[in-house]
Length: 429
Image (cartoon, rainbow, N blue to C red):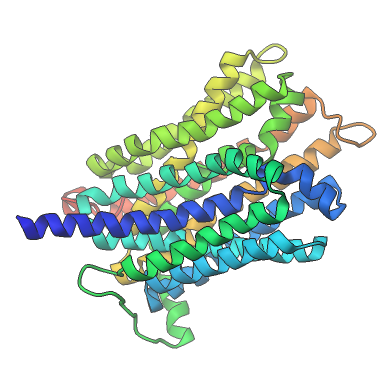
């Protein structure tokens, strides 16, 4: 009994340290959100140049997912997450001292690289340290608790920027990375049986062949499209377009719009554990749950668009809450990937899956900007309610593509793995 308790304690200790690394990565990722106006003045840049910071981070994060997955499979999550902490900390230090736009862009690129080196490692450590029946719940807790980093980036960074200035504010998170690195170096183990676990060195041709095999598996394809279709709406609003939509598209004040954006994150945090519990207890219905959440998003956006004039605050609040659930719903994709791939290939498969939501989010963010410019007479940023409805209607195209692929690959996955063969945990949806 004592040995079991020690094992549980060690598992949670490793998980908490790895989760702290992801928390710090999300904090670093989100720390610019409250410093936009200060950054514009510091680097003498326009709004479009400021938005480039967000675009670059998304591109880097999405582009790094498969390479990071391969690194984790080869060198183990402990080594890779330690590298992520170092890269993120140094990038924040570089951003603290950057005095020109090009240097600031380079620093934010490395913030994105450090961020990308973290999450897949956290998923792999979770799968290695916890029993199968708990993995789904712990994985969704990873996403939910990690999002607190985005919330905490707002208040402390706002205070720090106002009271200690730009350089010291960003150096604080860099110093936090140094402390966390020391702790992680001592605590993290790849698995209960070893501090580090290395995969075999393999030729590039074999790696490419295995990636192709993972992608061709219907369970991995299903996982990708679930991740593609569930989070993009909340990501686009939380990262860039939510505040303009609520203020200029729906006539709300800046204060109310800020509260609505906070509701998106709050819904993500609160719904995550429940979604994790559901997919752990009803694994055969994981894609059904994803389709239900996607359907709720479609219904809410349709209600807002169909409302005569601007929608009331209560309807917009419900939209924010439903959209926020899309974030933790994307974790269904990782659970599908876990049960569709052998453990030694889970990280690289997760890299494939994790690209989905970020590619869809980037497409929507860019599409909304282009359509707003197209529908705004005379240019400028005096966007109208009509322009926003046109812009956010682009979501229906992404939903249509994603849902059609989910429906297609869940049929193929179920044919490949009969329901009776999935107990206690299914290998496919």
